[in-house]
Length: 307
Ligand SMILES: Cc1cc2nc3c(=O)[nH]c(=O)nc-3n(C[C@H](O)[C@H](O)[C@H](O)COP(=O)(O)OP(=O)(O)OC[C@H]3O[C@@H](n4cnc5c(N)ncnc54)[C@H](O)[C@@H]3O)c2cc1C
Image (tube, rainbow, N blue to C red; front, side):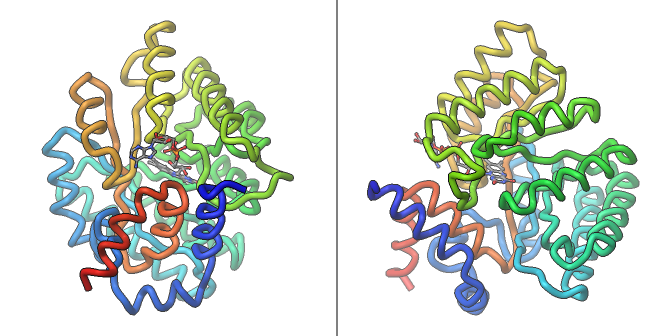
């Protein structure tokens, strides 16, 4: 196993630790997490969103949070999402809202997560805010897509995510075709076994290209969410070859990653959206980012030694 694979597995393993998650909340967003997280509350994130919007970048905010295992906590998350939707509208922000179904009770009961999602979707529709359901690990994929389809039949302002590391993903695109989906296409960020996901990075990359091509040629709005120059180059070439208009797709990147590339793409005339997480629950998100890119470790270590 290469050093890169070992460090990836190590950080993905740590990302699932509930003990460290609890401790992390006590530390606050130290260890460099503040470079990739936009504050502990939405109010702290507002000036950052305004700054990004003023630069011409669009945003999707994500209230960090996983490991929700009580109904009261899931209801609280629902209220927070609704308050965020109101504030996006009141402050005139160009921002969507991304959320995770586990934070809204998916692991507790179907009824609970659907009740929460309906309330959120009603609020989002009234305030003209688009909601995106993040994709979590493969054990939640089927239920997430079922919920997406059910909500998409009733609300137009909703998207979800498909991960190219899963074998099933091209079939999922076919299955979603009739729903005219708004899809964010990504490689995938969780620790998955070879039973469900490609192990070879080149296969994950090839599959993402196949998915970008399929979704765009099917005429659906597509968010290409990757920091990989090759995915960006591929998308630019594809849209040029097929005369796909710029308003049928966008590039998405995470806050704090490839800032100059985000601005360069925008200046070239492409729509770029920055995924900006906020909240006290930064731990799992931060660990997955470390797993993806060991270079991210350098600022984390600086954070530790400067405290
Ligand atoms: C907006 C957004 C939303 C996402 N939502 C989800 C989700 O809902 N579910 C999910 O499972 N995953 C999600 N992800 C994470 C995604 O699945 C990948 O884990 C993550 O984006 C890393 O893959 P990559 O395509 O960016 O590049 P990688 O495959 O990690 O890297 C490929 C190459 O890109 C370059 N590169 C990568 N990162 C950087 C960097 N920071 N700076 C400079 N160069 C870099 C390097 O040359 C690297 O070799 C999301 C990602 C984004 C951007």
